[in-house]
Image (cartoon, rainbow, N blue to C red):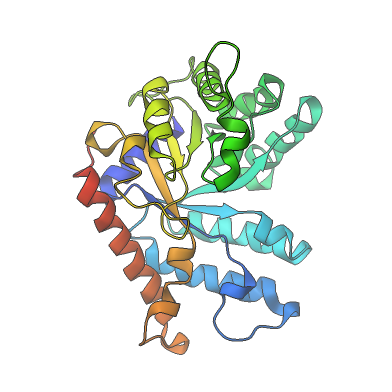
Length: 296
C-alpha cells in the first residue's frame, strides 16, 4: 500500500514534510530569459532536490507552473519527477484533476499508467463532481499501487464560501466531502490503517482540521498552508494522530526562496541548495517540536 511505504519513509527520516516544487520563473535567482525558463527551472529544481533529499520523504510538484511554459515546461515537469525518484523521494503530482467518465479515465491513465506512471506516486484530485469523477482514479491507483489526495478543506481564504456551507442534514460541505473520502477508501486500508484515498486539508483552518481528523480516521492528509500562507506547526497539529501519524505537510516558497533571506547567498557557490536544506531542516525541527517523535 502506497501510504504504508510513505509512512515508513516519514518515520525513517523523522520528518512529515514535503517540499513543494511550485517553481515560478520569478523564484529563480538573477535574470532569466523566457526562452530558457524550462531549462533554468529544471536546474534549479535539481539543485533543490539534491540538497533536501536526505531530509524529506517527498516532493509535491504543482503542474500549473510547468503547463504555463508550454511543451518545454511539461518536459521539465516530467524530468523533475524523474530526478526526484532517482533521489529516492515520493512524488506527489499536484494537478487537481477533475472530470467524469471517459475523461477522468484518461487523466487517471496519464498519471498512473502511461510514462508518468513510472514516476508519480500520488495525485491530487478534485472530488466535487462526485463519485463519477473519482472511480476511474481509484481503479487505476489500485492497479498500480498508487494513491490520491482528494480536496476536502482547502487552505485558501475563500474556501469557506462553498466548503463551509451547511447541508440539509446539518453537515458542512467539507464534512460531507470528508465522509465521502472515507467511504471511497473503505475497502483499501494498509497495515497502518490508512486507505489509498487521502485528503487535502489546509493547516490554515485548525478547528475544521480537528473535525475532519475525527471523521476521517483512515484518511492520510496532505496539509498545505504552512509557511508563506500563514500556518505554523502548532496550527496543523490537529491534522495528526498520536505519534505524529496521518499526514504530510507541504512547504513551497519557504524552501524554494530561502536563499533570498540569507545574506551569504551566492548562487555560484551552491547557496540555493544549502539555503533550501537549512530551511527544510528548520521546518523539520519546528514540526517535531509540536508532534514529538514520529512512530507507528
